[in-house]
Amino acid sequence: MRKPRSRAVRLIAVVAAGTLAAGLAAGCSSKNQVPSIAYAVDATVASYNGGSTLGASSGASAVFARVLTGFFYTGPEGQQVADTDFGTAKEVPGDVQTIQYRLNPDGVYSDGVPTSCDDLVLAWASHSGRFTKPGDRGPIPLFDAASTAGYADIERVDCQPGSRDATVVFRPDRHYSAWRNLFTAGELVPAHVAARVANVPNVVSALQSADPSALGRIAEFWNTGWAFGSNLDLTRFPSSGPYRIESFSEKDGLVLVANERWWGTKPETGRILIWPKNVDLKSKEGDSALGVVDIGTGSIKDLNLEGFRVQNLPGRGAEQLVLSTGGVFGSVDMRRAFALCVPRQALFDKLGKVPDAPKSGLGSGPLNGHIVQQDSLFYPSVTGAAGKFGGGDVPASTQAVAASRTNNPTIRIGYLRPDERRAQTVAMITEACKPAGITVVDAGAADFAPSQLTEGKVDAVLASTAAAPGPAGSLTGVAATSALRTGSGLNFGRFGNGRYDSITDQLVADDNSTTQLRLLTDAENLLWAELPSIPLFATPRTIAFGGGLQNGIAAPNQAGSGWNMDRWVLKR
Image (cartoon, rainbow, N blue to C red):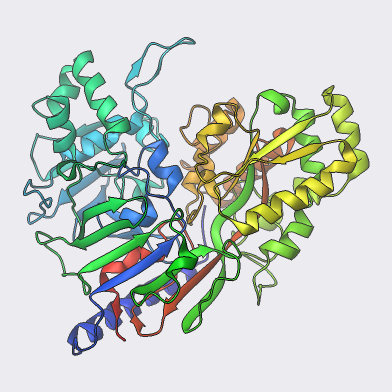
């Protein structure tokens, strides 16, 4: 949807300022520069493959954006920014939407293999939804992709194996206005690795031949072969960015080092230590390497950030409860009963409101849109259906419970621990819903994953956009929209509504403001009626840069503040 022009202008100014600062830092003396910078972020390191359900829902884009690059990356305000170091992409005029991609001729993975259009073919194939296998209830996708948005509209990718050029042609009846969200940082994984492990000549020929056995092997590796475990085979994890992986462990986190084969501007600091959510950050207080912290506000109790430049900002992600559409929530009446008692206004006032909260826009009040963001020009006009769900309406909630014919409903809310703010959120919901006869159980766990909702182990997930534990959300809102589409990997509650799917298809094809207003109003009315999720507030983020940290620019969105980590300099 269209955004105010001033936002794009601000983004250009921020990026330009960051580039200027980087240039000044590069010209300064390296005396007293710390050789390693630690970046604490509440994403989890689960998969290298940011396009998979596991990678997207764990926050791969906040960890690997400068390891696996693409034609675009998410900038500090959540906007897609072209990465011309990787290559160029331009729309070709014509009746059928066509995008011409050209990779940088100097591009090469850290293992010495040149980047090629094979990577685009694999990205399209894995996200297109075209390749299936038999399932109990009909065909199911071979690839466990987080989303098919945009990729499903592509008719073909013209690519000669090993070439630097690719032409992407969309279906004649489709137009995807958000095409800059395709083939982005974190989604373009090394096709040559998949081909090697799957024992095929290359993914392009395997797809052209449609050999079921070869496709099955490629899909199996794409789904699971880039997952992180105790024994990491680094030959499977080559880098196309300024940093590459050196090591990983549950205790010490992820260690990135400068990629010697990177063809762009060399990183300012040779080593980045990434401490994900499972690392005990309080035990790291005072560590001389700690330079950047990007976590949910209030998630770590009494965290000492003395000496840091601290910002508490409303995030681009939407703090929400993602509900199952089966089990206790199989009835829409029961989902409505829960939404009526969840104290959304009180939760915002106590846990979601950042200091100096704006009077309007992002973070100004409880979030009343499922897919429309608070700073959208459309927001005031499309969110009227949220009015009845301010929270604490015990009589209406009790009546809805009775209508659902659910005896003694118990709702298990899962989230990734440790997280003090989310624990308090569950506690407040527990107290508010108890008078309506609804029992709420805190099912937070250190090993929690949103897939537990699909498996029936919990009834709701408390997380940000698309069930991410940490950094989430973007200006285009693709993940938010996709997470409610039928069959989407990010649709952990298994909500399915053909009308909603049709609306979202039209939204990305027609950017006329009148049409957008009508479609968004229809979408929000439908979602507040069906309640596959309950929006709470813009997820507040605490972003802190240590004393002496240069070129740090806060990014409270899916990329996290590590979006430009290769420009960081820490001097003590």
